[in-house]
Image (tube, rainbow, N blue to C red; front, top):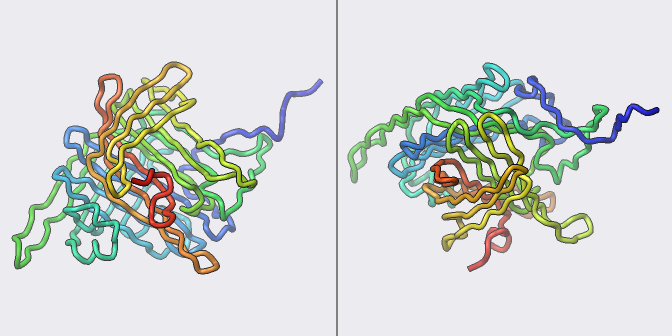
Amino acid sequence: MTSGFDPDEIVTVLLPDDEYTHVPDEAENYNESMYLNAFDLGMEAGGWFRLGNRVNEGYAEMSVCLYLPDGRVGFMFGRPKIDSNDAMDAGGLRIDVVEPFEHLTVTYDGKVCLLDDPASMADPRTAFRENPIVGCSVQLDYRGVSPMYGGKPQYADGREIPVEPGKSFAKAHYEQHCSVTGTITVDATPSTDESPAGDPVVMEIDGLGLRDKSWGPRYWQALTWYRWLPMVFGDDFAMMLSVIDRGPDDNGDPRPAATGGMVLVGDEYHKILDCRIDSDWNDRGEQTAMRCWAKTAEREYDITGEVLSMIPLRNRRATPDGDWLHTRITEAMTRFECDGRVGIGMSEYLDQVVEGWPIGVPRP
């Protein structure tokens, strides 16, 4: 008689301690990342915040992106030095766990580059030189309105699943929809010879958002392309749709893109079994709208999306041979509609740039 226990079965584990930082892997590109977005549907405004501790490389990736009600975008990115993985606190951005799975806070005390034309961030050096840099403060409370989704895959007997650091995007990942309250303040633009000082922007946020966390080795070039759509319609209805293309398999044969995500219905998540995202593009290959379909065990959903404000970002990395790899990530605040309800969220599209064009976007 056997117990039926299979030590090689893969299970997903998520513990309250995972809300805090982990002991880093030995991989040089170990990355512990926390991301949180927040949107107020009434204002059609909000933002997102990310810290990625790359402690074995001696720095953190710090990003703050704010979509203002008047269409401007405030953005800041930095690689502040860190020497430990003890906290998510770098470059003026801090993320604290008040109660695991229930309550987190985000604070930022720093500056943002205030962009009248967010598309100009395609050339970050010029964008930061030619646009005003102003003070910014953020104080937000995140409280879970859903269960947790995801965790760390491992073998049933507790063994780690080996990952190849050079091809890894993360070894563990989870997400949660949240209510968000607090204040985002962007200081007034300074006066110049050509224009008077602008007015400060104060956004009192009483909205919703999504947070995620991942850890393990990461290169932004580990995936060929992905489409990630987190959206919120209310504290009883929200979604995340994901389509990921990892490129050919080890034999060089093409493999289908992986689809996934979840739908929050009431206080339960329904796993997405299949989904599709069909996008419209501008002449720069950036998403402008999308028509989506998602299927759970319970039903099917049709969702449309319209980009409200978009900023193009990039990550570049040199290979040991000295070749430069270029990843583009277009970050768009997007209005969604489903089942007669209007929601808001993000359409985040990542593509490797090959011969000057994002690889997952049809050429004009």
